[in-house]
Image (cartoon, rainbow, N blue to C red; front, top):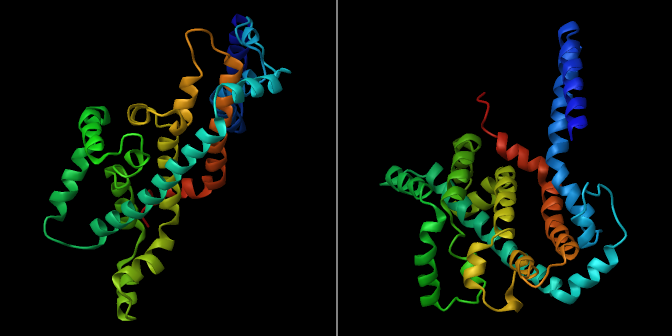
Length: 294
């Protein structure tokens, strides 16, 4: 570790000297720093992939093993023998997919209404909506569980999907995007052509909201895919476990096969990485939209 720090310090000194001597050196230094930060961010994922191929005693070895091992097949066998991974994966897909679709639908409608329509109490309602974002989610866990029990939604995916399908952040996100990117002249032209309000939204506005849909969809996908607290409280039956609950069930006081746990974690993380890579262009467009006024 000391040698590594000395090497990094030496490289930093060299880059500082280069940036002083030549203007191109500033760009080289900047790219090097960004690359180093990217490697540091990717290191935990790489180590997780490596540990998925190692035995438990190899994972605990020091210095740590930094390359792939030969125990992948055995870890997969142990994982499938311990938990029902396909069922938990399917449960996560059902919960997350349903949640994301409903969030995009209701939040886009709500944000569009707050942005476009001028109705009595609009500012007051939006202020109340923003105020709810300052309340910690954990503060509402007990009332939420009581309500779900009254509805009969214990051991039911509806308890995870429906209550947050029109959340304050999603409505705020879509409202800001609509304000910055939806021209009112476009809606007026559609009304002149005889379009109804629903037709205007689905045929004219929704295509404009694609970057906002992508960015909000990815954020909601990640949040629900990793949801643990509410799932732990509401889902009691093992056949209903989502991936976070399945991973928790693999950890035992009587001994844990961390190679199998790392393999299951890798399989659980891959959909998140694939989803982000596929929608990264729209995600960045959604984050930067409205940042520059023309």
